[in-house]
Amino acid sequence: MKLGPLNHIGVATPNMDEAIAFYRDIMGATKIHEPFDMPAQGVKVCFVDTPAQDGGASGSWGTQIELIEPLGEDSPIHGFLKTNPKGGQHHMCFEVPDIHKAKVELEALGKRVLGEPRIGAHGTLIFFVHPKDMGGVLTEIMETPKKG
Ligand code: CO
Image (cartoon, rainbow, N blue to C red; front, side, top):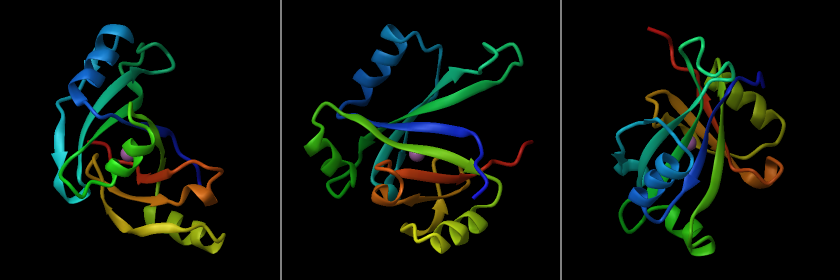
């Protein structure tokens, strides 16, 4: 697989408003996007931008935090919060230039891809890979959004 940028780190929370307040008031985040529901995935998400490595000089932003709150009774996040009632780090998401190629390559290496590529929170195709095949980290692979 061709490793692209670390797009975001997923952080599960039992309370979206408190999580947003934490990143704004304690961590000093200045760019917090509007939360939105993804009913098909059973989650509400909110992206928090961190500054780019150059401190924002280029006008671009760096890796995001993806705050995830359960949505609905069947949300897959309920199980995670049962084990981690106060929330915690849930997954890491790396970009790739070609999602289908990445899937074929990872599966050829025996990695368990969880389901077919589907539209993720950034509007591009994503899939997850089983943490037990990825050094203990639930890994999201996301096709890099096309610019412009
Ligand atoms: Co994610």
